[in-house]
Length: 238
Image 1 (cartoon, rainbow, N blue to C red):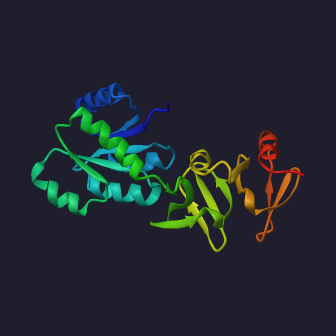
Image 2 (tube, rainbow, N blue to C red):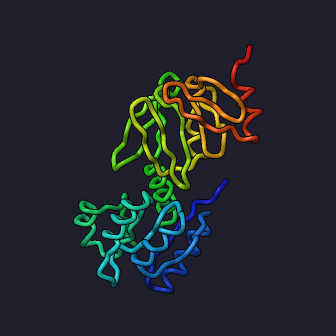
Image 3 (cartoon, rainbow, N blue to C red):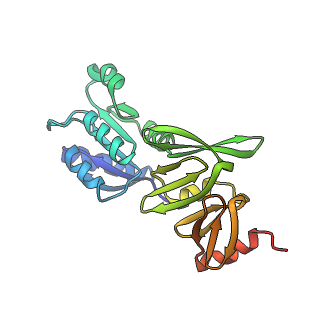
C-alpha cells in the first residue's frame, strides 16, 4: 500500500526531528521538511504531497492560517495546523482555512486518525451509491461540489495532475489523477482507452482503431495499444 506523503513545515530543528520520526514510525512518509510557510507554498508549486502539517503561528508575517488558505486555493491540498497556544484555539478554529487544528502535545493515535480523515475529506471525487449501483459522483471544481450523473458523462481527459470530465452540458476540471478516478468509476460502464482518456461505453458512436468517435460530441478519442484488448473484451461485438 502506498504511504501517505507528508510535507512538514516546522521552524524549530529539534521539534522537526522528533515529529518526523513519529510520523515515519506511524507509517507515513515525510517527503520533506520546510522551515517556513512561504517556502512551503513555493515547494508545492513543483512537488505533489498528500497533506501538509504546519504550525499555526510562525515568526513570519504569513502565519499558518493564511498559508493554509493559499495552499487550499492553489493546490487543493489538505492542511493540518499545529497549535501550541490553547488560548487561541477557538478563535483560530472558527476562522481557519485548514480543515483541522490540533493542539500540542500531539497524541500518536489522534495524529494518525486526523491525517487520514483530512485526506479522505479532501477527496476531489466522491461516489454516491443507490442500491449498490453507482448513480452519480460529486466533484470538487471551481470551489464547489458539483453533482454529476454518471449517465451524463461522455468521456474524461487527463492533463498532468488534472482531469476534465466532459458531460452533456458542461466540462469540469478536477485536481485528481486518472488512476484515482478510474478506480472510482464502475468498470461495467467506463473503460480506460488511453493513458489520457476514459470513455463511457454507452457514449461510443463508433470504433475504428486507433480511434473512438464519441456520440453527440463527435469527439475523437485515441485508443492506446495497451488498452485495446481490454476495450474489445468489454464491448459486445456481433
